Image (tube, rainbow, N blue to C red; front, side):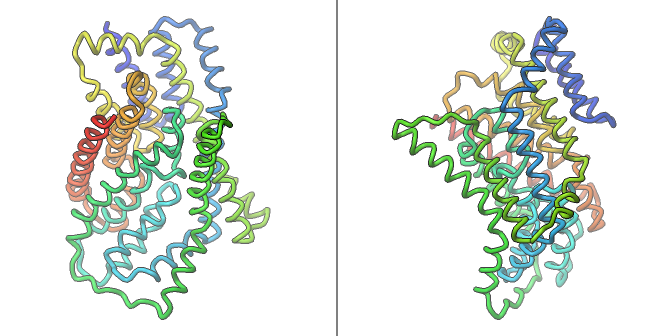
Length: 426
């Protein structure tokens, strides 16, 4: 049996198991075991590979960052800090169509499971003066809630992609930032332009004071990006001066999030009871287990000759690399409904196939894979934010998908043009 078929069977096994009540982490471990045994690895070899993957510094950094991100989100939510950011933003903006889109986008700055439910009442308030179809309101809330995740360093899916690609954080941020712009363009065309009958809101008496309030409340989040940029610039300056520094690309994110957490605790004067309350969440353990399973899955792939065999078969059967790079993440996103799911399931398969590419082409194909996986996630019927947005606005699922498909097609088309240009430049 061709190696490519074996890999697809194992890949399908992961996706099928994940559609049951079995956690995705166990699904990935089952896929890794099946793949390892099929590739001829002994139990001892599989155990050694798993141990090496679980004890690597990269695994530690990824798990630590994701736990801290969830902790930060919980602190900002329960302290009311996030609500204050949104309120200040509403005071600054007059255009109601902009408010309708930017409110869920502001809340989307922090990864929050089902966060679309938090922004839905604010979107409803922003457009209450006009008669707008329920599906349009639901999709405004859903779509703009997710425009950041391509490049924002607080999202676990993006951080996992950085770790698996083994590239500096700023490079992936820079390459994937245009993907977020494509999402905004699609949202403006299909969601905001059709909004009619919305009057501009009356601005506050002192807009400057409101803007200062917005900056002050957003300072912890802004600090994360500032620290990442500063540490990466410092590293490049020191390297140009002959002082080479060797540390994982995730370290700058880890430092930024720690500083952000300290700022949130001090700003909101949180006590030990508040911190303990934020720490009591089973999601921390679930996400850590998922990261560990992903790293084992990646380790089994890297430790076998499967990838080399796939490359040989791709040449022999003339299977375009483009097909694998686009379809595997798309299917993973559809099935799992989360960014960590499609990155963890598909990137370990795709990344070794890109070996030998120029740095820019490597990042371009990675961005294409991420965009396709992300669009699959947005279309997934198990995506919690889609379901809560639809239910809150009492919208029909079919009409929501009618809008979603148009949005997804445009984003993928723009991404294809963008990647084509990057590969020609690289």
